[in-house]
Amino acid sequence: MLVYTNAVKSKELPHPGTASFDVIEDAQKDPLTLPKLQFFRSVAQLFDPFLRKYQTEEPVMPYLGKDLAELIKQSLMRRFVKREVLQDITTAQLTNLDIGEKKNLMPVHCVDIGLGAEEALKNSKSSDLRILEFKRDCMQGLSSIVKKVQEKSPLKYSTVRQMDCLDPRVMSSDPDGCKAKMKGLVQTLLLNRQLAGGVCAGDTILQQFDAALSVECRHEDFISFKPMQKRLDVFLHGFIGKAYPDLWAFCQKLLLLSHGPASVERGFSVNKEIKTENMQEETLVAHRLVCDYVAIHGGVTRVPLTSDLMKSVMAARSRYRVHLDEERKRKEAETQGKKRAHVEEQLQDLKVKRDSLHTVIESLGKDADELAEQAEGKAGSKMAQLLSKSNALRRAAKDKLSQLKVLEDEIATKSAELRSM
Image (cartoon, rainbow, N blue to C red; front, side, top):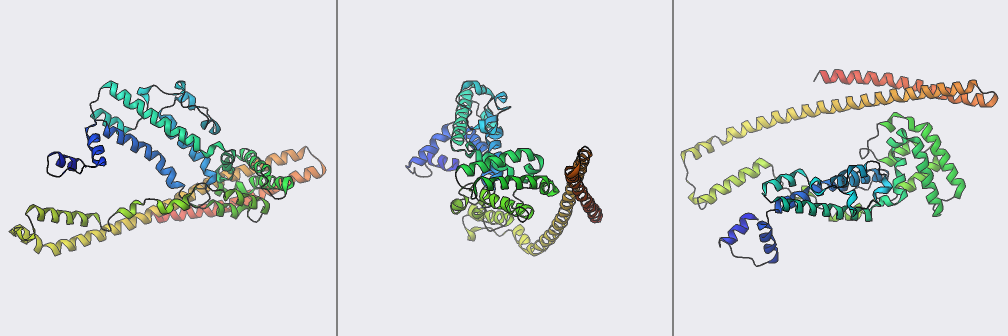
């Protein structure tokens, strides 16, 4: 654009006489155009990972509340809101925080406008007053963005904030919190008459959820679960689909809640891969060099056939063979590297599973001991019930120990395979 506008100024090209050209010409005169573009770029980069993650048809509602809260609080508000204001704020309070109050905002000179904008601002050689005005404008822009996000944010709805009780990692780490959130979801559906069976069905769902948290959610896969790598509905169905049918039917309703119009808007999304040339970089550069060289001499027929050019043409075949050999060696090295990286990843996953099994085994043993101690002070059927639960946990721990032994053998095998590469 700069080359084009300069060519128009020097009368090498005719003036297009359009409004868009006038806008570009005015922007070129503004010393703060580059800082503005860098600031807009830094803000866009905050939203890009979030938008890409949720451009999916998979059930991801249980992750939405946490990710959106982090986007608002850690990525946007931390740039211009005081740290002490954000320190103990809850997810629900994020949507009600008054960004317009000056007491909640940082001083203008402390606003984070991004490293690129800061560097461009220094190179613009603007006055201190103009820099402060620019940062104030950036603060107002960030404030407007946050206000719009707060206005449209699904975090205002308790259902969205409570949906993380179906996140396997949260189910494993905070079972008590999950129980309270599941109770809130059941009450919401009862209130809106969306739960067949009424209160009795709600009690059954809560009982089954409590049982699932006590047994199934102790599995090591809940600790090491990785969102977006495995479908959440497939994962949960494998653990609660058959054992807890009422709970699973309720979870299906929750997972069907839409997290966005991704499937509708996908046809309008811009895909960068479509824009790229179906050509390797070296070929594209070579074609451009040839075209530039021909253009310099005024056409193909005017290109001088020098001795260096003739020698280069004669050696083209040999250079091509050398290039093929280098490419073959490079691909072999990449293949070997990928194999090694794959084995290393498998080994790391096995070690994570081993650590998870250790944690589960220790937890089961501890709970079994506590139940046995409680049984000592009881009598009759209560004592038998506690001992039965304690023995069940010990059997589960014993099964986990056998799984741990198999896992240790697999780790040893993978380690030996890695050393042999």
